[in-house]
Length: 117
Length: 113
Image (cartoon, rainbow over all chains, first blue to last red; front, top):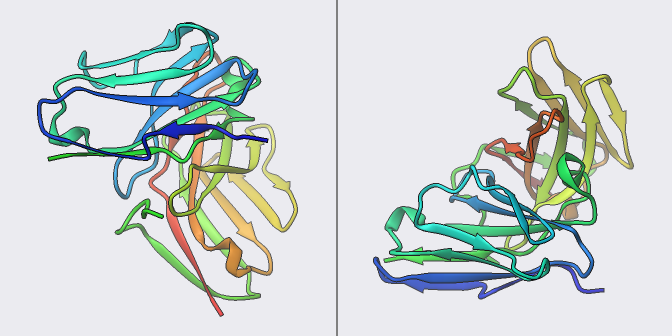
């Protein structure tokens, strides 16, 4: 019974580098969320996918952030030209439910800690 | 595992005592609330939820209270155990079409043996 997995678990990038963070949701889960969690803060919504469709990307902080889920399963969050303020834990969550109900059964991965030097 | 926060409000309780964790939510339009538990190095884990048409809901050893008048939530944990040590977040949303959950800043619960 695998849960949500994320890779890498830790990523150190030099300012200006591009990074790609991967999320493997629970098999069959329709909904997928990405969150950003700064140190000492609660997670902040970034984007929501229903299957391969990105239905809400209003939480992405800038156009340097891009997320995709081309086959409705694995998702990648890409950050271009990383800045120090991008340092955070990036959490992925998946759910078998859709829309707002997805939050009721939202299973989180362990996160990827990104440190930008 | 890595810490989820170094400067969070902290509640220290003796093992076996009851714990009460409070949360002030921000949006008067929010009508659905969830409490999450986050252990170090892990993602948040669902504990209990409540809709705005209720003011109390009980689970196993946990109770959530909702006061819409003052926009306040509380999580009560009965007979706190060492395994309850974690950071606790409340999350709110409006069920009228948004996918966004707004998380609070969290409270660290330390259970003293």
